[in-house]
Image (tube, rainbow, N blue to C red; front, side, top):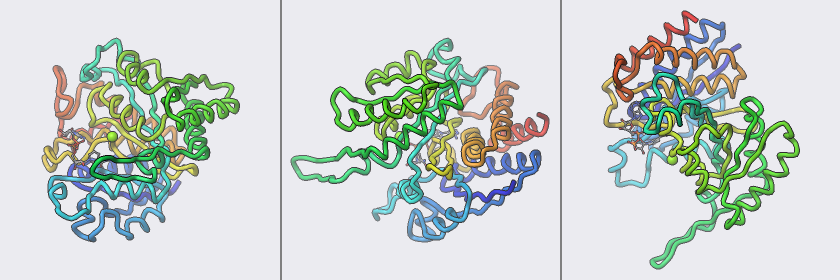
Length: 355
Ligand code: NAI
Ligand code: MG
């Protein structure tokens, strides 16, 4: 197969980890006989410096002409202090909105051998394997009106039936490919938008009799996530709840440096990126963990290109490197040998070539 991928490395360690991810992508191409064409573009702080905008039109065009997008991370101190209103993060919001990437998928999975990096007890974490599905383009973050006066402020939480339907459908479809369970999270005891959410979930369930469904209020879900995370398979929720719960879930298995994500639309087109930011504290030192970016490539192959075998090969290769006792400095622990970004990447490629 031939695919064209828009690669937007961004700032800080975004550049380092996308370089690693691309090496792994090309190794997969060699092994399974695919051709991946890569077109690189600017986003974030670098784009502000070179083009005057965090998401330049050239970058949008490049992405329009590609089959999927791989992104590193954006942001950094330099632009935090920028007196103009241009912020690198605006590029991220703009690209998600432009491409209508309404479904944000964040898998959280315990990896044997390295779960001791988790703040939770080993027996709570060891069988965790969940996918958080967050609605990404509606709700409070985008609702109008917004207003602030000296004495008050307004944010509006709006969801249309159609917006809820498409994300819930995605969750049911994903559950079918996994363990067949959906947990829908809302606040239906107080919020009208949540009452509509729950009604839509119940209606959609009729189309998926083979999928088990339960509902949780968001406060209870926050608690269950840390007391009993292995009860979850697919968790589906609206934008704000999903933002908070997915960050909470991200600490369950250990390091931020190994969590991938996908933001996709109905036709399968998607943007794939590590969950972490540009990590200015370690940028340029070869310390970054490339696992999140590499696993984001695996998600791209699976969800945008339907290359399930290739995606599993990448996941297994990354897990094998950990099982063989190697890690990057963010996961430093007894009995493990710490590797640099490029050494870790080479180990993953060696595993891929050996499998
Ligand atoms: P961050 O995720 O960049 O870093 C948090 C901590 O985790 C740092 O100590 C960092 O060294 C460490 N870390 C993160 N990724 C790592 C990796 N792959 N390997 C090893 N260690 C890793 O979040 P922070 O520090 O809050 O933000 C830094 C900049 O990144 C800011 O400008 C922020 O706005 C931006 N940011 C961008 C995101 C994106 O592009 N999607 C997401 C989050 C933050
Ligand atoms: Mg967040």
